[in-house]
Length: 140
Image 1 (cartoon, rainbow, N blue to C red):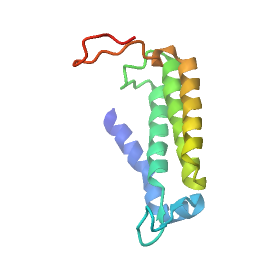
Image 2 (cartoon, rainbow, N blue to C red):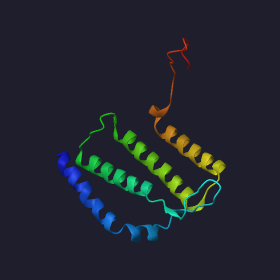
Image 3 (spheres, helix red, strand yellow):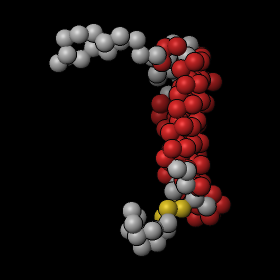
């Protein structure tokens, strides 16, 4: 079964290999050198995260609709979708930051609202207590 899934992922990624330059030009998100923090000689396309998320999305689609369930720690559909849409939210914030260079303050605010929203939807994300091996007291 997993061999078929691997073959499927290879097949859906082959067009990306052949049309890489066209996709990079279409998306037009590049890391431009500024000689302060970025010292590369020419602009570098920021396409790797999009490719990873594309495969992540396809995997979740296959997993949910064909019930492969390699992740047994998702207990119900709500937790499954909270995980997916949380990942989607962080991806979109990062993609927007790559394109328009958000300030650190704005990224922190957007990510904080996203985390707050996810915690309000799914109470299993709340940390109730912490136990450290070097600290003898339970922190609630």
